[in-house]
Image: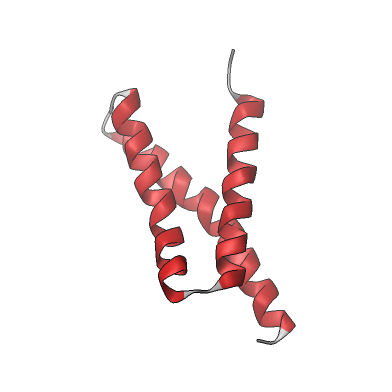
Length: 82
């Protein structure tokens, strides 16, 4: 695989995870779901692309999504009200 394609897949995965998580949060807020339902909704929308990448065995995309997952969790912990 050419290096440019690998970098493009990594960046796609990196940005796909937070966007999918944000989409899940927006839907949970829209329907006024409780905390447990909201977390399940976010998990579904965020992990669905990761499952697709694992099924197609795109290593760069998987690496990008896992990095996006870690960045999203760290950002959430940093801005979470105490």
